[in-house]
Image (cartoon, rainbow, N blue to C red; front, side):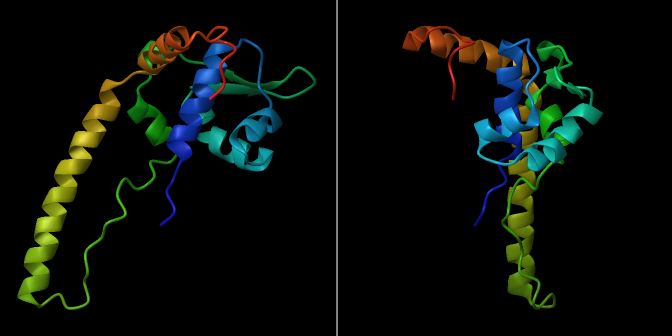
Length: 152
């Protein structure tokens, strides 16, 4: 099963933007993420609409951060990139009158609701500033040239 990595990829881009004042072009971001500029523009559009990034056209244009990292959570970014489905587990509805199917589906639905609530709560509790601070600590611990020079 293919996973949806839009959230992690956009968090990656945002953290790089937070370390560099210069605009990043869609082509540069695409190269970093191993995708093309059109996919970058399409995905970044949600972040722009939410006010987390801005884009400028032209020779010195590109994407730049437009938000306070303290004010934006992982949940905010999740919603901005289209809120991909959290879990791919689904119920079987081939025979809705079957009592076994009913109890199995009810148990799965309850477990999925609880798990999704927990994940949403956790995503809402972590700010982009928290990620940036974790990144800085990791760079220092690894002895990297500095947060602005590390690539991951």
